[in-house]
Image (cartoon, rainbow, N blue to C red):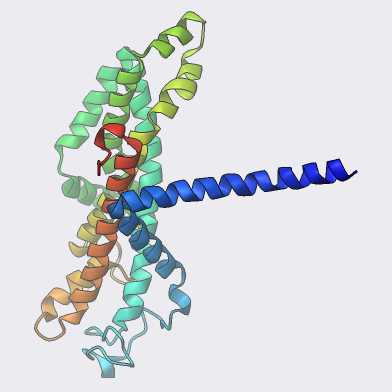
Length: 299
């Protein structure tokens, strides 16, 4: 009984020891790569800020107080108010929800579509010409113009802007996945799997896709950063999120007419937008350095 009890204790300690090893490895990588640490810190901070927006002393972001319009930052209004008397602090916090929702949704959906197109194009040369000519056609159109065209067709809403940005960002992911597939398809272990009679589906999911994981993850972070910028640009131009919904791009657009009267209306959403995109970009660069040995920084 004693041996069994000791054995159970030892088995219980194994997962904890493994978790400590993983945590130490992560902390070591963060110490080696300060850019990744800064980027991760910014992204985590923004996510927590968006999740906790309702309880961080915020008010209704659409609430109107015309008598308090253009109030400068103070203890009552931390980020001041806009031309309708709306609390800029609350609108910035709730705007982070829109930006991060769009970033995460577009990164996941564009990655899924890009993997599907890239894997098929890279593995089957007969489909390569058809898929890649379609992808090249989409990439020749400027992203903003393509996004505006889809938004004009679909209408302004958060769901529609996610669909539009997924369509505009999928071609880039598809080219990355195709390039990795073409390279991995020539590896000896793929030839060995073919010689053993492995099906194409098994080769793709067992050998190609896992080994293309690193560039896919890195590109997904860049897609997320691009989604935040493009969504803000479309909202700034009036082709994105409806004005009634607080978004950083929409707030910046509305504040351009009042720069001399209330500069805080553009400073705070612009700062949050800048730090968010910078944080995601730094995180993507750090992940690239960690996953790609040829790009790893040397001390």
